[in-house]
Length: 227
Image 1 (cartoon, one colour):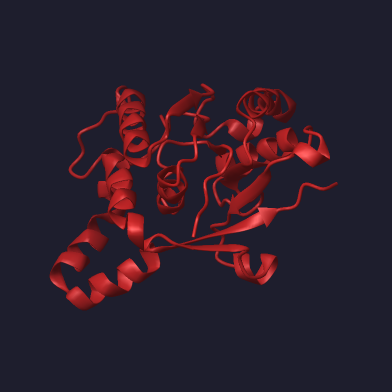
Image 2 (tube, rainbow, N blue to C red):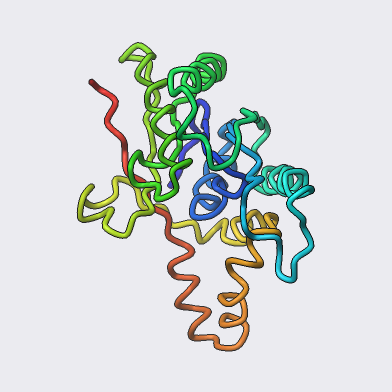
C-alpha cells in the first residue's frame, strides 16, 4: 500500500512520459495525499505522431501537447507543473550542469522525498537519458541526509538482466481507470501508439484481460545516489 509522502517530484522530458507506464503509480501517491510537482523538459514538438486520424500539424503540435499535458495532470492530481522550455530531441546537447541547476532549484523549493525519472542509460530515447542524468546530478548536490530517493523507470528490454529485479512493483488496479484517462488525455500520441491495442481489447475479452494484467503493474528501480 502506498503511503503519503512529503512530496513527489516527477522529472520527464516529454508530455506523456509522466503517464505512459507511470500514471498508475503517480495516481496512487496523489490519492494518498502526496503533493506532486512535474517538471516537463520539452513540449514534444518534434514528435512524429499527430493523432489517428491526424489532427495536429507541426506548427500547432506544441500547443496541443501542452493542453494534453495539463489535462493529464488534472486526471493524476498533479497540482504543480513546471516547463523547462528545452527543445525536443536536443536535450542531450544541453549543458547538463545548467539543466541540473534548474532541477536542483525545484528540489530545494519543494523538498521531495521521492524523485521519479527515467533510469539513466535505460530510457531508450536520448532525451530520456539526458534529462534523467541531469536529475541525478541535481539530486547528488543535496546533502546526503536530505536527498530524496530516486525512482528510476527503465524501458530497455534487458533492464532486469542488467539492474536485477525491480525495487518497487506497484499494483495500480485501484487507479486503473485514472491511469487510462491520463494516458488517453495525450490524444495526439495515444491514438497513434495504442489504437491497435484498443481494438484488440474491444474485440477479444481474453486479450483485454491479458493486456490489463500488464497495464496494472508498474515497476521502478532505485537509482543509487550515495557517491
